[in-house]
Length: 478
Ligand code: G3H
Image (cartoon, rainbow, N blue to C red; front, side):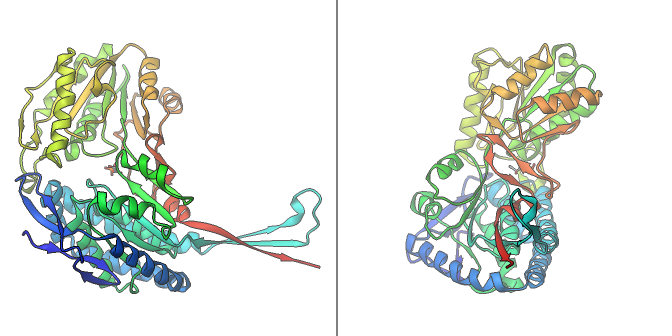
């Protein structure tokens, strides 16, 4: 505790020449728990230079060998699940069991990516010219997928390991090198994860992990001319990054205000279970959390009662005890959530439980009769606070969903599959879940947001494709 963790450059663990460190505050104790190096811009330059050199050799490494190393890293990662999960508990207050799940899921993702990579990168295309008007069969076109170069990965605090490997593994299998800038909360878990890749024996400089203050190295990294692709998950910063980044492919997953529409014919017990799981797991700190319930007035009283009864059973306390609701990541986040609750309360929302907060720990709260003039109808709390808006028609629900600047996921509960499909088509989001809460996984499913929720599509296959470019060779016959 209170030791300064080294950053990872040229396959070595190093101290920054800045002599400075960044504290990681444990959300539960609100005390500094770890420290990481505050890297300098010179150190970033060095990392990107080595990444560039390492990538050239890596691109020539046989695909099966790249896959083999990824499988090794996945195995080490799974072996290390306990110590990595402990970091997640201390750094981001993730409930102990969920923290282990995150690491195991990450190992599985890396293996799956290695398998998927050898398949999709092992195939190219062969085209002939005479299908296009005016051409004879005199040109044969061979295509393959080539790497982009240096990929910069910036994951968020809520999945510092999983949302890092979901960028690292596709980048590497596709022949890119990788520079990781972990979130400050979660940086030590990420460094530990990087160590698993180190132990697997990847070539020198292929993977690096740079830690530090966003103000010092954030823009410097994202605007660095040596970076050929950015994969970012997080909040508004992503919008700023996409405005400043150069002419490179971007993969962005930003916020969400995932709506859950509940129709009159819905299985209300199923809807309740999913609303509580979707709204409150990891204390609502997921981009895919249920962030607003839009329920038909005729079943609203029953649904709200059922949800209230289930919310009352959620355990609240420290992540070490594996409680359902744990402290939110920072004090400023807790203050922001409280601001949304107070605004709704003042404007007449029904507060279904007593509002209670101790430090960063906020008790789960359901807000009924929320109206569009309340901030919480539109903003994402990223906390254990869930608004319910009563609607009188499906159109009203779809309208609310589509009026949002976000468009990540949404869900609809009904027994009528035809209605569900029509609603899915009408909702302007990247994914609609029928009769289940929003979720990114399984990790090979496509994952994308419309509007301010993102750029591009993730999921294992899409990420591999996104981190490559098509190269053609045309054979011209006499
Ligand atoms: O926070 C954003 C994540 O991509 C959500 O992932 O649906 O597995 O919790 P999840």
